[in-house]
Image (cartoon, rainbow over all chains, first blue to last red; front, top):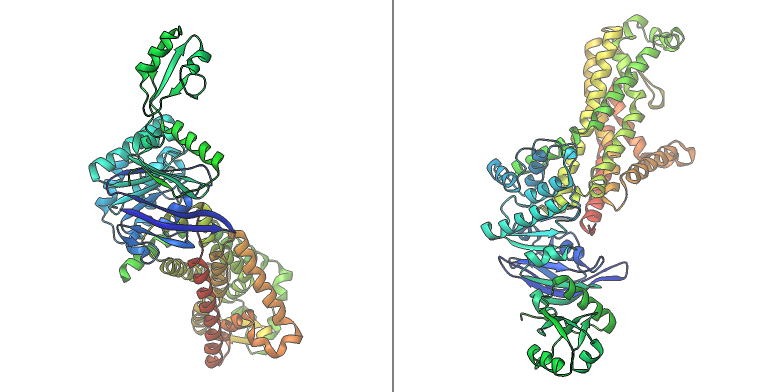
Length: 305
Length: 282
């Protein structure tokens, strides 16, 4: 549904993106991750025809954004981290004005979008009276008209309270499930991305570091949290600590039962063994740290290709 | 296609005319008009009115110190403020939207940047005409309420225009001059609009365009540039006052407006090119 090919962009001589390529499948929820300045917003900008790439091309539903911007954008809606509205107008008037730039949108379609985001009770209030969460909902409503096939959400939960974050997450899920919308989102809240996204891409310093299922990010080696009375002897028995003080990782040919048996035979008191499920956050930070340490950029790993 | 353009234009006009600032501006003109008319109550000011010239031209002071004469004076006196206000609005139209983030929201839509600018410019043109008509209509109404009906006396020494018209012809000339005045004023709206298409703050767009017109006006009045006077925009902009000459020099007016429209079109193309090649990023 969304494909970018070899995108490069420099701002004042500084590379914001360098030969970035990835693809978002139809109907999936895809996360774009990266630190501030990693190139996420530039990628969104290029996909929406707001930023001109120095090299490469972006496609929406097979249509080049750079060559047929208007045709490509008929298929997407978008919201930004801090959506701009005409604060002195009502939410409804804002919707009408933005929708008019897509063509003649029937009133019923606007009403449906308002209903979807749950703003029907306040839609005729001036936007300046809206809370941040309501503004985000209004932004989502305008992205939903007229009937996009995909939505690009740049930091949709930024600045929302926990309740707002939960509601936005459920809304995104609902849109994906009920309407089959393809969703591409960026967020600094990795727990949100973890809960929502099927696959992710990680940008680091303008380069694609990873694309695939986030669970593949840390490899396949199982990890366990151990509770032992003597770590020095446990290490000597083969326990490989990967996250201080107590998380170990097994080699591909190792077995936790075998390691525990060796430690018990060596007189170590093993009080607990608990499998550790990696989080996106831990894997992401580890990957970024590893990349910063190596400072080399081979072709991006593509876990599902 | 055409109806979609009007739908989008309606949205732009709604944005312009729903702002409180718009009405504060319109209200400010009203206050200024009242102030000017009130000043004409002062005997010293009233005496300064060139009654003798009217009499030399064969008229009576009482007949020509009328509502429409006062309205024209108000129109001329408020002209500078009108220019300033048009530069403020023109400078806001694009740059303020970029600053507020609404431009990025709009550019997510399948509308070309050229079309978007043309819609916004059309709204600016309508706004310019609306403001001029508003100032002129309110000035005429208030002038009428104060001095009643009467002939129109026109005195524009710089353009060498001294004329008197009976009430009916005066009203016709006054009304006809407004569209030409708006057309002249469009130059400053266009300049501010074009500046706002570049990567600059709304205030900067207003200041740059006003500075340009100020420099142009100074050059126009410098004797060194007498031989190239027709090049300066401010000189061409005063051509609207030709409507008040007994014999209207239409060929001169057509030439002047062709020049102004040519400059406006060129500036607009420059603005469109600058806007169309810009990156928009938070």
